[in-house]
Amino acid sequence: MSANVAPTRMAQQIYKGKKKAAQGGHKLLKKKADALKVKFRDYAKSIAETKSGMSSDASSAFFSLTQAEYAAGNFKQKVAEGTMSARIRVGAGVDNVAGVKLPVFTVYDTGAEADNQSLGLIGGGKKIVAVREKFTILLEKLIKLASLQTSFVTLDEAMKVTNRRVNALENVTIPRIEAILKYIERELDELEREDFTRLKLVQGKKEQALLLEAKAKAAMGVNDNGADSGDIMSGFTAEDDDVVF
Image 1 (cartoon, rainbow, N blue to C red):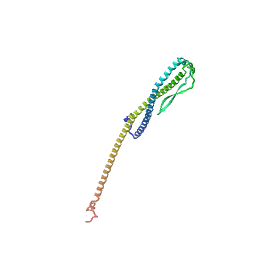
Image 2: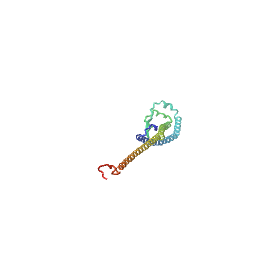
Image 3: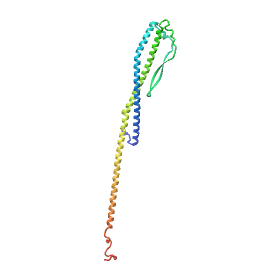
C-alpha cells in the first residue's frame, strides 16, 4: 500500500491526522470494552444468583400446588375454564450501556381481579392463595432471568464486535498507517539528500567558474601591466628626427 502513496508533505500531514484519529478511536473503544466487561461480569453474577434461588422457589411453588390439590381437590380445570384477564404483564424497555442498547423486561401488576376467587371456599382456600403468591414470585423471577439472559447475550455480541474493532485498530490499521508514514519520511529524506547534493554540485560549479574567471582576469591584468613596464624608448627609432644623440 505504501507504494501507492505519493511521498509528499501533504500526504504526510494527511496520514498523521489519520494516525491521530485512529489512536483516539482506539482509546475510546478500549474504554467502551472495559465498561462492557464490567457490565458483563455484573450480569453474569446476577444470572448466577437468580438461577441459584430459582430452584428453591420452583420447588416451594410446586410443593404448595401439591398441598393445595390435596386440600382443595383438583382445581386446575376450574382455573382453565375461567375467563380471567392477566394480572401480571411484562413491559419492554431499553438500557443504554456505553452506547449498547440492552433489552430490559419489567413486571407490572395490572390490578385485574381474578374471577376464581370462589376457589377454595369449601376447603383449602389458604393453600390456593399461597400457591398464587408463590407462583407469582416464581414468574417474576423467571421474567427477571429472561431479561438478564437476553441482555447478557446482547452484551456478549457487542463485546465481541468492540474487541474485534480494537484488535483491528491495534494490529492492522495503526501499524499500516505508521508504515506509510515511515515510507513517506524515508522518501522525503532521500529527496532532501538529493536536493542537497544537487545544490552542492551547482554551487561547486559556480565557484569553479568564478575561480576560472578570476584567474583569467588576473592573467589579463598581468599581461597589460607587462606591456606598460618595458623600455620607454622602445617606441622610438634612431632615424626619428626629433631624437638627438
